[in-house]
Image 1 (tube, rainbow, N blue to C red):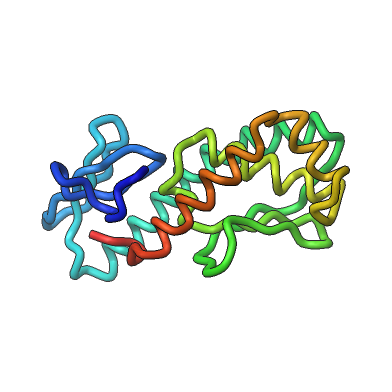
Image 2 (cartoon, helix red, strand yellow):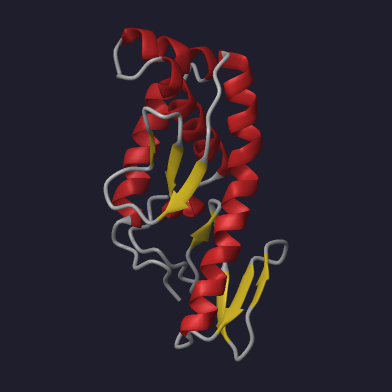
Length: 166
C-alpha cells in the first residue's frame, strides 16, 4: 500500500481486490481472478466496457453478502445497489435507501470493501456522522479509525490511477 504507483514493479498491473494483477495485452479478453491475470486489448472500447462490467460483477460479489449481513444485523433495509464511477467518495446512501458505490472500490482489499458496506448500511439508521453513527460502525469494526485511515491512504493512491488502467 505504500507504493505510490498503481502498478507493481514486477507485474505491471494494478491492485484488484487488494492484490496485484498482471495485465497482458492480447487480442481477446480474459480475466482470471485465481491466476490474477487480465488479458485484453486496451485500444478496444468493447474490451474496456466488458472489463468494466466484469469488475462491477466481481465487486457486487464482494458487496452483496456484506450488505445483506449488516442490514440484517442493524435491522434496516436497502432498496437498490448501484456501482458507478464517482469522483469524490467511496459510497453514499440516499434518503430512499439506495446504496451507491464507487467502481474504484474494486482496487481495495475485501476487508475495506466490507467496512464501506457496513458504513453505508449504518447510514440507513443514522444519517450523519455523529456519535450514534460511529457507535453502530464501531459495534462491527472496533478499529474503525484505523479503517478510515487506510481508506484515506487508498483514496490518495487510486485517485492518481486512470480508470481503468491497462
